[in-house]
Length: 162
Image 1 (cartoon, rainbow, N blue to C red):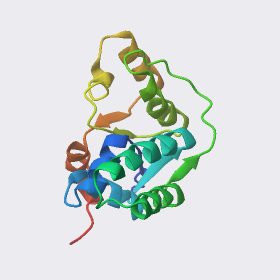
Image 2 (image 1 turned 30 degrees about the vertical axis):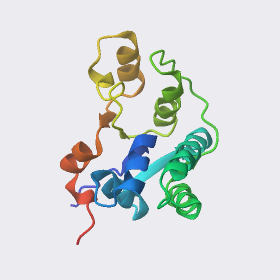
Image 3 (image 1 turned 45 degrees about the vertical axis):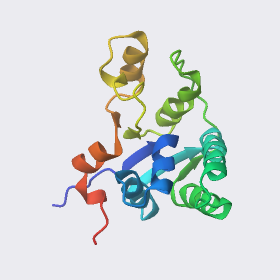
Image 4 (image 1 turned 45 degrees about the horizontal axis):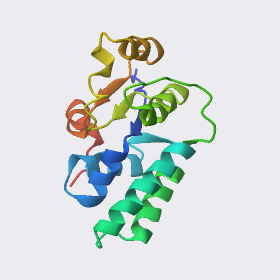
């Protein structure tokens, strides 16, 4: 009897997507590639896509090697190959950085297994004894918050064969 493995469902923080575009040899790029080949399901919403677009367009203004075409192509791939949640109906108050609530709300709504980030505010959230940490554990039971390196370390099957 073959054991069925649940798919890895990830919410990518903007800093991960930014690093993936800037450094093609990074673990961030490996995670994005895993989403593109559907080894992981990337969860996106309109507010998150809007944030990606805003931040990446600002990056393009500073780095001429990142083109508007590359940005739009990347965002279309994530939306088409991932799971697009049009309306996120849950709310999560995250007083430390209210703009980050959209990631947690999407993770709740779409039943994510991982939030992938480099943000120092979110990485310790599942173990935090503060109110936000307790609410995170209650509403996102079993969801990991991990850096791309940690996610790949826990799930080496996400790496594409060379």
